[in-house]
Amino acid sequence: MRKIFLILCLAVCAVVSGCGEEAAQKNSVQLLFPNPAFGGIWNYIGNLCARLMSDAGYEVEMRFCKDANDQVTQLQDAIEKNPAAIVIGAQDAGNLGETLSLAKERGIPVIAYDRMIMHTDAISYYASFENNSVGEFQARYVEDKLNLKSGAGPFTIEFIAGSPDDSNAPLFYGGAYNYLKPYIDKGQLVVASGQTDFSAVATERWSKENAQRRMTDILQKYYADGKSLNVVIASNDDLAEGLILAEQAVGYKGTPTILTGQDAGANGVANIKAGKQTMTIYKDPEILCGKIVRMVKAVTEGSQPAINDVTNIKNDVMTIPAYLCIPMIVDRENINIVKDFTK
Ligand code: BGC
Picture 1 (cartoon, rainbow, N blue to C red):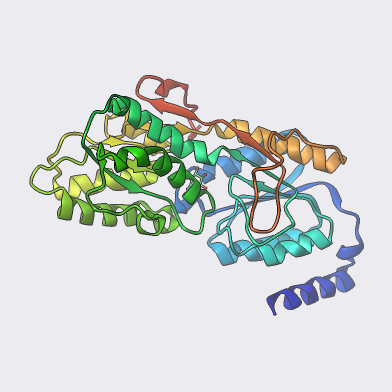
Picture 2: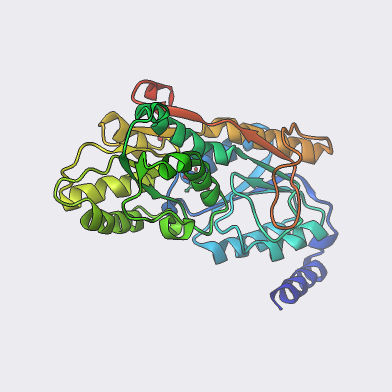
């Protein structure tokens, strides 16, 4: 129904303004990004991508959405402008597919930024970091710090995963959990809450407050009276901050928790420097935005962009040619390599 409505809208637009018949605006790029208030470092990423794209000579329109429905509206508008390419950091992996079919009908190349988009065959390319490796690197760090390979333990552990509407969230979680599972099976790691299903550990909207609420509950139920929570695998820096706040709120008295994160955002970096968070996974946005600019250049010039994966990256409909960058572990020792996102 909505699709019919959209087709009608675009058809009316084409008749009224002739926009459907105009050649694609060869130099114009539409950038759509999630609401930065929902966490992560999208604010910096959006502005950086817009700047790099415009330095490369493109006319750029960049917008952050308010929520998932707002991004659909922005996408409809972006398609009507008939740009040479659309780049999307999806707010919700599941609700853009229907609208994207219109981009495909109009021959507008679509590049998915960082997050996969589901229910669509309209994506030309995907560029991201190795999402599975993000979680695996967190897990390897813990394995190393706790000497798990030598049989040390038992240690207590809890997980705080990302938002269920983000296709990356289960990949981060799976990367960490699957790597540590043999140690859980052997009893070297003990999940006192018993919460290990993605649905149990996921955090709506990647919200620090939601993470804080769940961890407060877990701390009160399973880690009261000085019992230590040795490790928390938090999928990003905001969720890590949720744990820090929960520990403060309940007056946690156990030994310091080894706490992971992701993004090396301003809060993560500050918490690592202050000794409240142990490590983060650095995904230098300049590297990813640079790849995106080169992808846009290739599709607008009708050439092949550099890709390094043609088989493994799939949504529920298609296999998408992708470029996957390698993330990096950062802790107190090498925190100075992180570029200051706020400048
Ligand atoms: C990104 C992370 C970010 C999270 C929350 C994910 O899709 O890959 O870098 O922390 O969204 O914004």
